[in-house]
Image 1 (cartoon, rainbow, N blue to C red):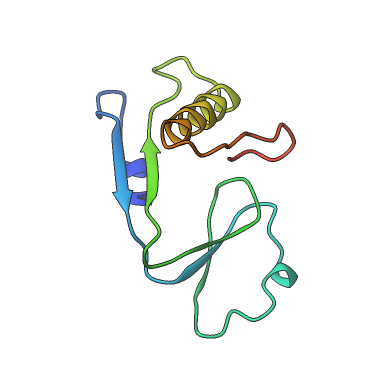
Image 2 (image 1 turned 45 degrees about the horizontal axis):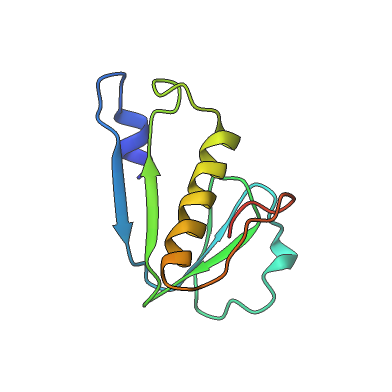
Length: 107
């Protein structure tokens, strides 16, 4: 993903990746080492996203939007809000109640 981002230019098409990770903790810019109490054999990977610590593992589907937000004239907050609203709408189709929290991005 980092290589894709580093090598893209204004003409590179946007992509959506659907992946499943082996067990891993990703530690965002707000994450601290003391937030990971007992990782065991699970690797901890520093990433350049916002947020704290997130676990990803088998059975969990992760979607990455690899978008040129400047080309699309989107701000980060606008994109995150749009993604939150899309997830809330999708879950509502399955009669699952979900909502975003203004002080904690995500659903």
